[in-house]
Image 1 (cartoon, rainbow, N blue to C red):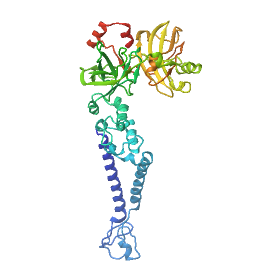
Image 2 (spheres, rainbow, N blue to C red):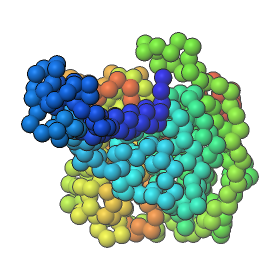
Image 3 (cartoon, rainbow, N blue to C red):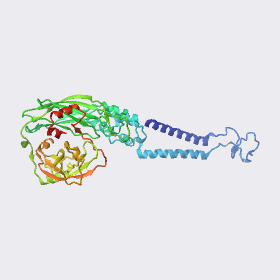
Image 4 (cartoon, rainbow, N blue to C red):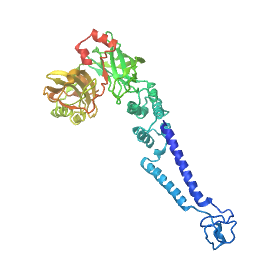
Length: 487
């Protein structure tokens, strides 16, 4: 099998040879066949060197002048055909240039090599490369070359810099799921360290359990599983083990809850142990199996973060309810009861949210913190926590609880399924510096629609891994409602 560059250069070599041959044929047909001092019949081109007089002994043609017997022989039909062939091929090349521009004739490897100087997501060079990626025109070697460039960055875009994040990082996140599992193109991605950070709001009320936001971004191949052990350095505070899946899109931060802190605390130290488990290609790599066998856990790194946090006041002094009929109506529109259901996957349903509906209804400096529960005959089947702020189109979310067997029975044919939405001050605290929050509540019928694809998108985080003895021990030690809610 020839790779893309080989085919590209062979095509151009064949084109050059073709043009050269046609030009030579046209030149030879017009100029090459000269008399070189010999007398020839201008009609049949018989050699008349040994023939006296002006009459051809072969065809009987009689010349009127001696000069007629010394003419250059021209094959105009052959010349015209050769020239027309060149015109046709040139037209095809010109059409390609018209459609794809001059970048369309640049080799793929040349486009990749030029990225440090031309990397602009809207530039002609990258747009042409992106077209070829979408058309599956890159060879395995070209994919590896591209991923290696993205993984290393360049002199203008160091790894993890804002410039790298807006260019090379986006390429990896957009295309890593298309790379063949275990291929050479995936290898450069394993060398990219994860980007880990822990943050929280500036201050927390003393009667609220603070939340530490653990953000882990990775660029490893799809289906890599990540395990994180978080241990706050607070006396008596247990460790938390959770898992993260990597998808095409970046996941929200994991919300680590710690006990309420006494007033006067200025910072919290948290230690993280990060491990990963690589996907393994199954022996039966047929279209009928979706199973992926996983390798052993391998260490990635140990991280320690000192998170500045102040504890002061009470929750009631920090946030006040923002009572507004228009805000209540906007929340009903933002959460209309629409739910999508998949037939397979760890998390079989998703709630449709349109945070933009609240943009004009939220008072200045207000925040939304909402508990969204899917109920079956009053029983909670799923709890989703949401929070967002004034003027935002985006929202943060956390799946707190799911009863998967019950959710799989969800249907529009049963009017027992409802959606309950409640405002929550502690969730609104996660937004930032808000002074007021939505404090309403409503219950509406759940409207279900089935997804076109069978497999649900993966949950960004989960706790329960039956193959992990550490989690099994932790759950056996403290199998409480709070543990279930965290899952």
